[in-house]
Amino acid sequence: FIHFSTNFLLFSKSIMISAISSRAARTLTSTANRRLASTLIVADHDGSAVNASTLSTVTAASTLGDITVLVVGGSEDVAKSASNVQGVSKVLHASTEGYIGGENVAEAILAAHSSTPFTHILAPHSNLGKNSIPRAAATLSASPVTDVIEVQSSDTFVRPMYAGNALAKVKNSDDVKLVTVRPTAFDKAADTGGSAPVEALSFTESPSSPAFVSASESNSDRPDLSSAAVVVSGGRGMKNGDNFKMLESLADKMNGAVGASRAAVDAGYVPNELQVGQTGKVVAPDLYVAVGISGAIQHLSGMKDSKTIVAINKDKEAPIFQVSDYGLVQDLFDAVPEFEAKI
Amino acid sequence: MRVLVGVKRVVDYAVKVRVAADKKAVDLSNVKMSMNPFCEIAVEEAVRLKESKAATEVVAVSVGPKQAQETIRTALAMGADRGIHVQTDLRTDQELDSKAVASILSKICADESPDCVILGKQSIDGDFGCTGSMLASLMSVPQCTFAANIDFEKKTVERETDAGTEVVAFPSLPAVFTADLRLNEPRYATLPNIMKAKKKKIATLSASDLGVDLSSGNEVLEVFEPPDREAGVFVETVDELVGKLKDEAGVI
Image (cartoon, rainbow over all chains, first blue to last red; front, side, top):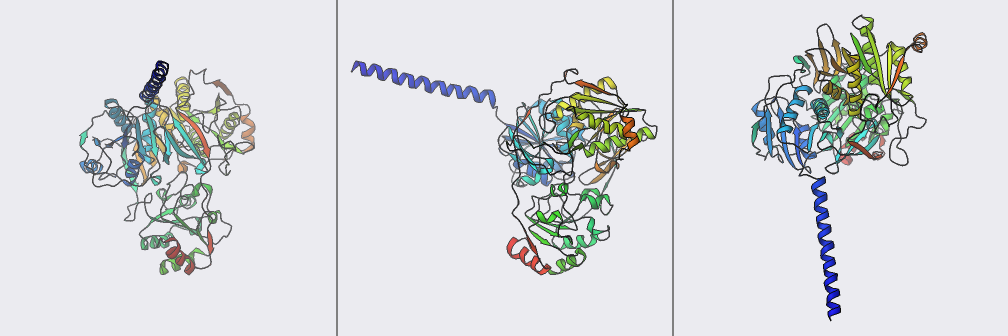
């Protein structure tokens, strides 16, 4: 009995020791590797409200801890729209009359981060994000991860390379992760129901910041190309800018946006902000109608995540037909008006 | 004015890349390599500045393996005056990152004191688009990214934005510019210029000569191909198309 009980005591002691050791070991590991995540999101806005790409960025950050949204410039309305977003804990409003470019936005990011350090700083992969995230990253000696399409964990992200022909799983080991996200890869967070407090953030404007002179933007009542549910896009086959009116009419009937291939933009048919592609806009609408577009690798890169792709082209060999769900080999000048009439 | 231009050797834009069997990287064996298209535009802009006498010297810099010298030679053939090659065997599409390249370029700029630096807005292999902004940050200078037109006399740059274009006035030089598609149309190097370029000098350095640590916060764990789309069908008529969009796809 004594022998048994001694062994029993030794046995249970060893269990206790190993139990304590492994729990202590886990605690030490998690303290060393994983501070509580907290994310700063740099909002993209149009001066009156945060835009759709910001809402997608909030979703991308939803597994990364508390979310603070940084609004640089813009009115109180923008800050209010940020605080209304579900999932946002706090809004920092860095008011400024200065030019809202990479230089100034990076300064605002650094001011926010120096008062309360974040583990993650995210922005949409828009002009604003592309300019500010890398600039801030350089100051923080961090390696940015851009155009992320999936957040696998607090340090592992998936991003496209080679015009989306390869995807890379990237692990980042910096203390703070500087990331831009591809808005079309993440559903938009609800823009009502939130009630985050808004705090003013002061920052020093960058002496390197340029001054705004003028902007040339096409004013359109159509939905924004980056987030429209339907996109009608034209390529070199449209032959001139006037013919794009046919696509505008079709887009309007479906409450969609108009896009274009690089060839159409370079030929001067339409302005540059309509360009869909590797170095233009990436779109992922429910319906993408490619009209007179051959389907170069670089164009496909900007639209191949669309849910349904229709291609209309009189060349049966056009590469666009390799990605389209429905391909119509017909002269677009006949097909498009007929299509519009019949939907 | 001295202009420094960054040039990168990348997979040719027309190549459809394949992921290597070990899924660690893209397979680059026997693949045609060329100068990154946006770097070509950057070189062209710099050479035009020299031709208009706004610039006195164009220096082309590349970070990469020994073959990056070919890319520098192309820049020299387009009209750059001399080259600097920073040698590394790190894979330039995924091991050498923007932070490392920006650090190297900022050290070179500290020596060369260029009045302006022109880079491509992104390289078509990594598609990161960070180097220009990171370099401008390290140099504490303006970053005139996505440049569609640069006016050095007025000190303004027209930039491409999500909604169109805008014009901004940069406060001072030096500044970093990144070239967008419509900045210019690059020239082809002519044979006489290619021959002349052989005599132009390329200095070779290593990152450690510059005191730069090339390590990255990023590690590529895996590279894989995106899922294929299901094959589509051809429709014969508009009627058939409308029918399928209504009944099958449910989008109209």
